[in-house]
Amino acid sequence: MKNTALTHLHESLGAKMLPFAGYNMPILYEGVNAEHETVRNAVGVFDVSHMGEFFLTGPNALNLIQKVCSNDASTLTVGKAQYSCLPNNNGGIVDDLIIYKIKEEQYLLVVNASNIEKDWNWISSHNDLEVEMKNLSDDYSLLAIQGPKAVEAMQSLTSIDLASIPYYHFEVADFAGFEHVIISATGYTGSGGFEIYCKNDQVEHIWNSVFEAGATFGIKPIGLAARDTLRLEMGFCLYGNDINDTTSPLEAGLGWITKFNKEFTNSENLKNQKEVGVTKKLVAFEMQERAVPRHDYEIVDKTGAVIGIVTSGTMSPSMNKGIGLGYVTVANSAVESDIFIRIRKNDVPAKVVKLPFYKK
Image 1: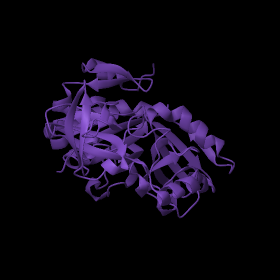
Image 2: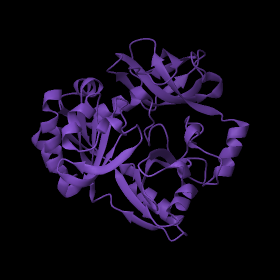
Image 3: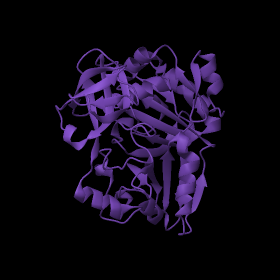
Image 4: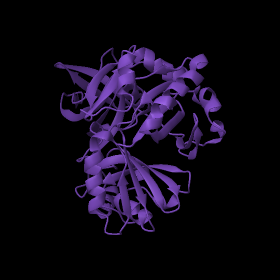
C-alpha cells in the first residue's frame, strides 16, 4: 500500500483511511454530508496526490498526444488544459485524463491513480516518435482546493490574480512561498476552485499555509467519499464505474471530447459508430421515491424487462434525493423517460433527467 506525502497528517487529523487505487487514502473526516456542504458553500481541501503525472517533451509530443487521445489537443495554447480520453482498439476507453500544455513542445498528462501503469504502457507502446516521456507520479503531490470561497481564501498565497484564471486554464507561479507551482482552475466538484501541483517535499508546507490562509473562510479537509458525491451531482464520469475498457466515449456522452478532424486510436470505428448510432447510452436519473441506487443495480422498464445497469448512485447531499448514472437502451434514454431501479426485488420508479443534477 502506497502512502502520499500527507498520509501521516491525515491520520493525525483523525481521518478514516482506506485503500484506494493502491494508496492509503483519507475517505472521511467528519462525515460525507458535512464535508460535501463545506465544498458547496465555502472551501475544502482534498489530497489527491495518488493521481498520475506524465510529462511528454519534444517536437513530436503533440503528435503522440493526437495519436492516442480522442480530443483535439492542437487547440491548446500554453496555460490551457483539456479533458480527453485514451480510446482502446475495441471501442472502449483506456482512461480519461487532463492534458496541460506547459510550454511549446511540453505537455503534462494527469491520469487516474488506478490506471497509472496501464496508461504509461499504453502511451509508451504508441511512442514511435521519439517523444521523451517521464512518469513523475511518485514525485508530485496534488491538492484540490475546491469551493466558492477558494479564490478569496487562497489569494494571499500567490502574486498572481487567481480570479483572472479562466476555467480549464492554469499558471505556473509562486504559491505559499515556492516558485514554479502549477495553479490550475480545474477540479471535479463543480463548485470552482483550484488544483495545486507541487513536489512532495513542498506539499506539507503548502497544506499548512493553505489551512492558515483559509481559516477565516471555514476551510476544512475533505475525504474521497465527498469527492464522489460532489462529482456525481455534476454528472462527471468516474473511471471504473461510468466508463471503462468496454464503454465507448459516444455511449458515455463524451462525443464532445471525441474529435474526428484527426486520426487517433480506433477513430474509424468510433466514427462509424457515430454515423450508425449507439445501442446504449449513459443517462442521469433521479429516484421518484426515497431510495438509494447503487453501482450494478439493474435498470428495468415498466414491464420488468432489464434495460440497463446503474454505474454510479448515491443519496445526493445537496438535493436530499437518490440520484444516479447508468447505461440504458437508446429507446429508454430520452429525458423524462420513466425507468425503474431494481432494489432488493423491488422496482423503484425513477426518471431520466438532464445533467447536472446540482444547479447552483
